[in-house]
Amino acid sequence: MSDIAPGRVVGRPSAGGGGGGGNGAGRLVVQGLGVFLRQREATVLVVTVAMLLYFGISHFSTFVSQANAVDLLSENFAPIAVIAIGEVLLLICGQIDLSVGFIYTFAPFVMYFMVVYYHFPAWLGVIAGLVSGLIAGWVNGFLTVTLGLPSFITTLGTGFVLEGLALTFSHAEPLTPTPAIMSAGKYIGTSPWSQFIWAVVLVAIFHVVLTRTRWGLYTISSGGNLLGAREAGINVGRIVYGNFMITGVLGALVGLQIAFYDSSIDPSAGGYTPMFYSVTAAVIGGTAMLGGSGTILGGALGALVLSTLIDGFDILGISANILPVIFGCAILAAMIANVQLARLRGSGGTL
Amino acid sequence: MTVQEPGADGFSSSPAPDDALRVEHISKRFGAVIALRDVSLHLARGEVLALLGDNGAGKSTLIKIICGFQQPDRGQILVNGQEVTLKSVEQARSLGIDVVYQDLALIPGLSVYHNMFLNRERVRWPLLNNKEMRRVAREHLDEMGVNIPSVNVDVAQLSGGQRQAIAIARAVFEDAKILLLDEPLAAMGAKEGAMILDLVRDLKARGDVSIIIIMHNYAQALEIADRVNLLQQGEVTFDKLARETSYDELIELVVEEYRRAQRERHGAA
Image (cartoon, rainbow over all chains, first blue to last red):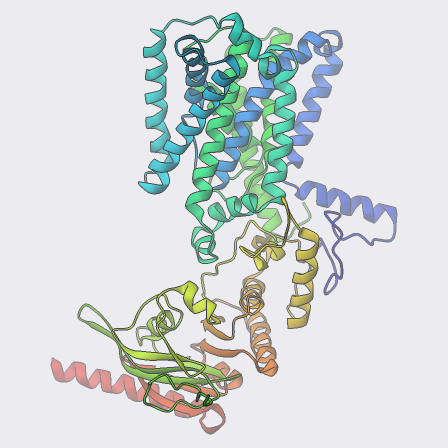
């Protein structure tokens, strides 16, 4: 039955190495493959590599150029991956944040007004923008945890509020950040690779947070077995509050990055699209919508799949109109694969 | 200085010194429904007490009161001879009383060792000390004779019996001295059930854990328990050592109860 570790009791389980101890390279390869395929990220990793290879080989000169790499990794991948971190954490808790795209819209305005009208130094304006995301996340937590609304409704509401505020403050017109503001954005979003570097660092940090810290364990516990987590004495409310606040700050960060990158603070930036892309990335990456499981790395790979598709279609010259069809099919295929693989894992089958 | 008698806290009845738990004259009602009327039971240290009874006899209410989840309307609870007021599950747990429910408190998406250490993780700041937790969990499970392929697997991948075993092992690991098992064999095959019974037997052999086990299967109860209590309509109607009673006697009691209930119903009609 258990092909991971045959025999009675495994003495010292090798870290992540599966059963180990096989004699014969063939068996080791088969075992290794089995372990690999049982990892949640395996399917999406295979798809990602295949797509990158396809575009890399068929359109070598354009796809592998630096300009395209920036397009792909900084402009397309990074925002989805960063917001997906927050969505993965919340989905694992059994929650969702529909408002994060509007936090993204709203935060740059906070920064602008603080600097231009209240004469904050630019760096403090950046922090004020991030804090606005933190506060929005806290409000989402308050409505969901303390007042007991479903997070779907909470964040639907707060999303509209933030959208309306951004439109009102800006009179629905884009603003151009002053040179002082732009100077503060050098390492945040202005230089071509900064968004990508931020994304990689944040993904790495939160991957460790989810897999190697108490916060991560309690996040999984909150979504996996709410009563069990409470019974063990875990303060589930605090975990949900915290993950909403993390998501809020990440949404604000992405908003600021885009504002710096585009040198424009646009009330039509953000919105539902980046949020839905991030949720899509999370789901493609193997995060369960019902909570209890998921990985940050999977979400990042999901983001890479989506951004490669966006970028690759651009290069192929295919109309972007068909993209949502592809995304829709990708979500459904990912879910089918996850459900079926989970069934296999459950039954202990080898594949 | 005079030597204080154990239990010399003003409580009048004289608790046997080796009783881990005494429940005295507990009553509990929910609106018009009397769940427990004047229930008393005792549990000696290292003893396994099987609590039998029909659905609705009050077993679950009794367990919930002993584990601090609900408070009785009347009556006392004594732990190690000391009267205690159990206001919460946490408080009961701090006194060494822990309950393992049918719907287990394990987290399916976490590994066995993370479940064993849930909310008592070993940390090498800022990260979890997984190596240490794996080792200790492995040792503890081996010591208890719990047989699972690896402590690394997610609990979701284990069978019902394995999960039950992990849950019991966790409670003991958390220093439970009075263990309440709420139908640990429900919805379990014979082989899995035997595994849990073995685990309970091993615990009994250790001698430091006292167990109340709620069961439906009288044959299994007689096999595993030192003593058997029967709860009927909120009252303990039967209390005998397992070796002094028999399967037939227990069945006879239940049939009698059923007949009496029928007579009452017909009498009322």
